[in-house]
Length: 434
Ligand SMILES: Cc1cc2nc3c(=O)[nH]c(=O)nc-3n(C[C@H](O)[C@H](O)[C@H](O)COP(=O)(O)OP(=O)(O)OC[C@H]3O[C@@H](n4cnc5c(N)ncnc54)[C@H](O)[C@@H]3O)c2cc1C
Image (cartoon, rainbow, N blue to C red; front, side, top):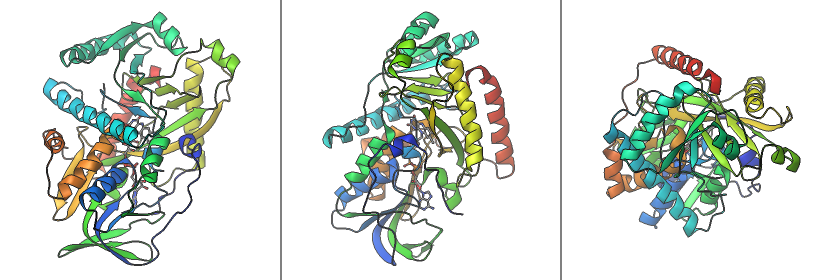
């Protein structure tokens, strides 16, 4: 099946159009093949080029580089997460391991943008875990205790203060964490593409259909040509399962988001001229909502089992309509039809919200499954899987490998039934905050 993205994502459409797109136009041989050119693959390519300056490295993508989830996410570079969906962060030491990985993720993105002087609208604004439902107070108080033990600076805020900071009276309470960065995800991934080292060949619009291992090489078949590689790193995230990788450990979810046009000065004044902010939901299926640097409102309030290869326009329109309602109930004074773009994107999940980072066979490596933390963790895992695949070690790899490993998932149709039921249940529990 061919992977077809909608062309609606505001983040991507706000970038300069890329030229010089190269596709696979003949059979090739290389030492290293990276499949997937999002944060993970691009970061792996950069590291491999440093470790093996004289070897042939190819990075290949089914669509244009960076135009998967990496260019179409909500732009939260997180230091902490409250809910990862399917399990709660009950154990302190496991939660600490998770946040240690987030910290390494923030550090590596920060190092990249400083080294290459990248403008990606970086804003160390912190973030809010907010709810309209007083019943969520207990969850936030418990979360606060966890953050206190791990020395994360944070405050619990009430309705009045939130109204001033966010420009909406919708939320009754929130936990604000000082850490966490808001950025323009498209600008970040485009910078990673633009700064690819010269010994990395980027091939786009070339979808890997089949791969097989043949003694000490891997044979990869695309539409008309093939690539034979000595080592391969799979960085296709939501499309790992469709390539038969770690089948019983990950599954894709489709997310949709909408973004308004910039608010006019009058509209912006009418909501109190709040500074740029980002809200994450207290319950897993509530809305992520953000005021951007250029005064647009972004909303993401779906996560569902759907065909990851394509979403039809009518399906996208239905989700966009619900997002219009989500904006309306938070900002009742704003006009109704201010949504300018709606798009979908694919994330990859594991049962216990842990990430995949491993050697799956001689010369075959994979990194992925970051849920809503792929900006930092994907960039980190890309770099570190390149180091691991080069038979080297690092302190970061030791930290990554000490996390809980992904747990086994039941086969189809039980998996889809289980995930759909769970999502429905979570959506019901989050219904006031969708
Ligand atoms: C709407 C939305 C909001 C999100 N919000 C956030 C957020 O605020 N913060 C955060 O940290 N994360 C967020 N995420 C998640 C984040 O975007 C991902 O975790 C991250 O982009 C993963 O990066 P990646 O490089 O591993 O995968 P991707 O960016 O998905 O890249 C994988 C690439 O593989 C390519 N590919 C797939 N199959 C093939 C094939 N057969 N052959 C060749 N190429 C193939 C795809 O075209 C794609 O470009 C969000 C995601 C979505 C969709």
